[in-house]
Length: 166
Image (cartoon, rainbow, N blue to C red; front, side, top):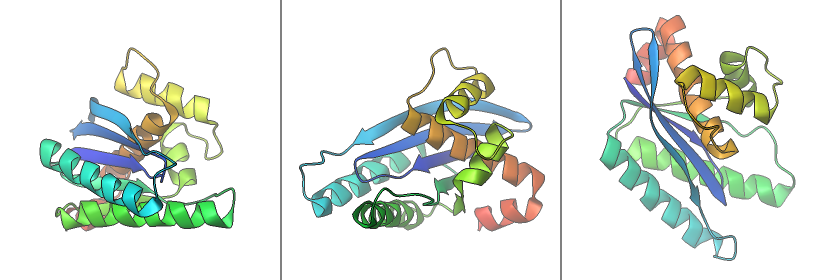
């Protein structure tokens, strides 16, 4: 199963692709889309949709996993982040990919073993779990961690796997 994890954002949107085969996780691709903050939000969201659609068509993932919103610095930030998440969900779902959503607590607990782990701990564990040579950027690490969380949830919870494959 090829899993696309997304760490949504209206300025930076991380993505991570992993392959989950039997009990093995392997790295496929990751990065982040940088969206110019000076550009109007509507244009950034449109660009994000296009970039995600292109990524999906290039890799053809079997499932998508998206981090839920858990914190925003201000009401305006929360609204922008919510709109970016909506674009992510629409782009993945519109491409026919089943999507699951996970809280930051679930993701960190799945990857690090502790739901309140710091960014550095998540980055280090993602690097170790996927055998990466370099530590991924925060946005990439969060997206890869989201994909790893989905792989763990699917393996341990047959209902989550069945729901994700619909």
